[in-house]
Image (cartoon, rainbow, N blue to C red; front, side, top):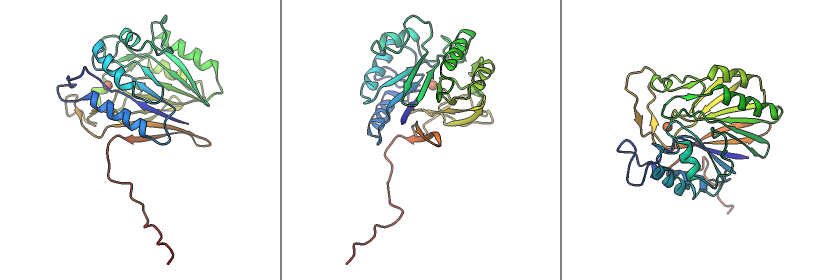
Length: 272
Ligand SMILES: [Fe+2]
């Protein structure tokens, strides 16, 4: 089973580049084309937050138009740039989004895997939060299926990642969440976004994987030399491949046109 993860698309209204220079809509269009061309095709896509840049209705309309071209279902999570009401209004056909609950958290069952999608949004703030209410909801969902392989998805990583600018916008409540997650051995992975870089770390007896953006990346500044900055390193997404007996594998998939493929060996000459 193959699952795609895209994150931090930061779509703006057409003709309005992010930060005055990044055509995030164009990058998402190429990402969608990339996902549609993969063989085998992913069975579903998770978009782990920062779907748009400023939570505006015209941004969500553009994002919806671009994601509508995907040939597989796409599940939406909130990021710090998102707006819960804006997502609900722009994607009325996404029936998995709770209408009554304040938080946009839900469970997706696909094949042998169970996906628990969390909402770490604090409106108007760059940092995220797992408050008591959200932690209790997570604990209840984990208790429902203790022997089913489970993947948790959330925008803000629950670990510090070594880039000071981003660690200043981390996840409050991560220690309490670690206690909940560590008590459930079925958790195969915690899939995140927010950092605009591919990162892996062990945490709470499982593994945190952070996916890069299909648009701009955050500068890899481990010595806090620069003000928070982005860089146009190659756009990419993550492909999570469930392959027993290994379990869940994660492949980084670059988006673009590259020279190749070239066979390592010349084809055997036909017998004369
Ligand atoms: Fe982002």
